[in-house]
Length: 114
Image (tube, helix red, strand yellow):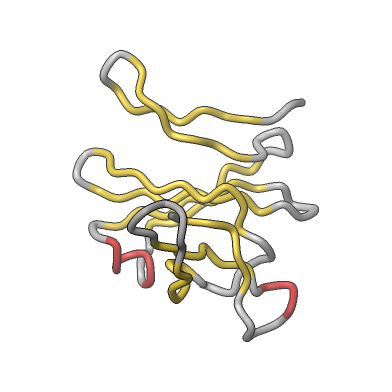
């Protein structure tokens, strides 16, 4: 499971990371090293990971004065560490997004209010 987390290292305002927890029975959980920890912002809220068109997409929201939802695109899980295909949806009302299926197609849904 991917979760909002922070690291112990780096500038306090940039310790946000996408944490990783694993469970075999969904009752006992083990924390693992961060899935993604680029030291670019505070808490990386509502992380979501999905595959689309043979590539992996990681989205997470930065709940700061910027109110941005970031995205990362990679060919495999390890690619997020070095991916150059990055960006963010810059709109204050776009607090987070989730992927879902509609009529056999995967789409992103904006969650927030104007």
